[in-house]
View 1 (cartoon, rainbow, N blue to C red):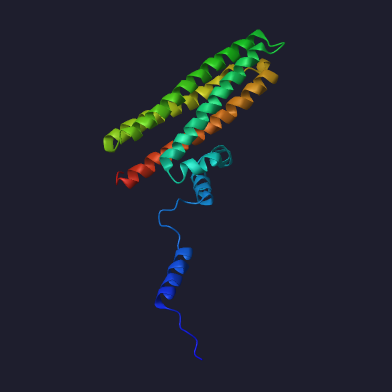
View 2 (view 1 turned 180 degrees about the horizontal axis):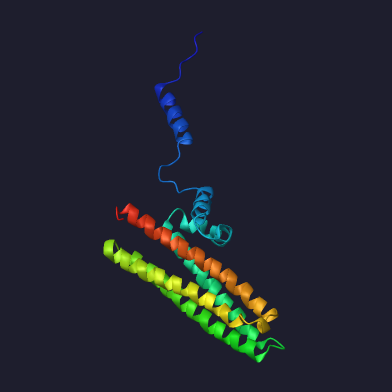
Length: 210
């Protein structure tokens, strides 16, 4: 006796199930691996790429592949590090056996890094205004110029902090502790400035600006 052929409805259902199982939805989000690759690739253009990846890899899911969000994350990391450095250096003034000249240099450094904290906060606000106002053209350039000025100023402040320890009689554990904090902070902020500049360049190119 001949076997019964499958009905057309059963064949149609089979094809629907087969293709549904093998097609990914078109609106799916980029994978975490792709987002991590984006951060690694973007950090490759900074002065300290390994540190950049270390600081920003935890933001991969939030940043995804958005250059503005990456710049925002880099600025936030810089601000957090600046606040931590300011607190740490401030505690050194209570270090047992600290010399008066060292104590003064520490207090000056706290004030300088505190100013850096203020400038980084302003840079984050500036970037937020660019997003909320949908800045474009000359307005974008104006906001970007302000943003670059704030971050560059923060970078200068951090370098100035170490000037107070330049004398040879300032060598010692206090100077080394301050240097350890400030050097890494300077590198983090330098990376943030590089990513801000990259964001500005890519935005202009996307808008057909020089």
